[in-house]
Amino acid sequence: MFHLPRPALALVALASIVMAGGCSSSGAPSISDPNEVITKSVIALPAVKSVHLKLEVSGKVNTGALGGSSSGLSGNIDLAGTTLEGDLDVVKQAVDVKFAVPGLLGTTGEIIVVDGNMYTKISLSGDKFSKSKLSDTVPVSIPSPGAVASADPSAAVASLTKALDDAGAKATLQADDKVNGKDAYHVSVSIPVDKINALLAADGGSTTAGMQLDSATFDYWVYKDSLLPAKMTIAGSAATLGNLNLVLTLTDYDKAVTINAPADSDISG
Image 1 (cartoon, rainbow, N blue to C red):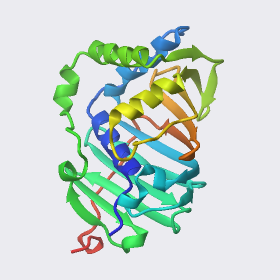
Image 2: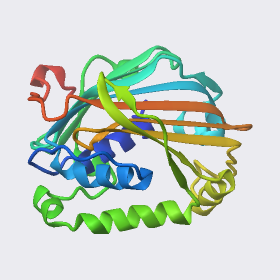
Image 3: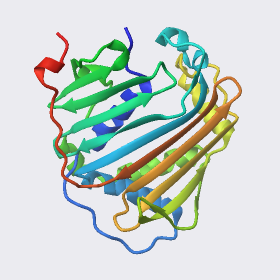
Image 4: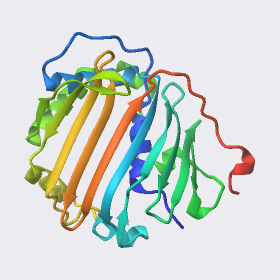
């Protein structure tokens, strides 16, 4: 059986964690400290009601270096044209995203999360959705909206700051940019490759075992008017792994979205 790729599961998990707040964001004066741009964007996240996301992936990856034999995948995969795009309804804790991986036998699919259930449709497995409990599929504990609302945002900021400091990260504010036609801060974050490799080695998982990155870059954009995340790009390469580039763009914050479960006739028995 073809299983949902880990990156898609991780994205759904991340979206589920983010989806926990209410209220809307307000504007803020100009910021000149790149670390402040990052931390204030983290503080702004619990206020999100809805958002549209688009993930674009490119590069060529040796799946054998990512535990490919255990996942049922092997060999090199060209990820050009790989996308995942859809909406998150924060208030109702619902997700509807469609994905395409042309380099993997033209695979397409859709993931819907609503009312605590997860519906997954993958072209390689047929034209119907499979249904499961989100809590059984995504191995994370999703906080309730009340828990997030009562949490101290300064604790999250302190934790993020410490993690970046421990990794030897250095944030640099670049020239202002535009994302989706809106003004945005642009921050580049550099982390020494040896620090990243040390973290991979410490992870001890079969997926990262023996992996050594040769280069890695991370850039982050934040909308100036709302201080909400606008875009992030991650690029990395390794002799054994290949190269991977990810671009995540976030738009249409707090616009009304409607996410429904598939019809019973579209769900496999």
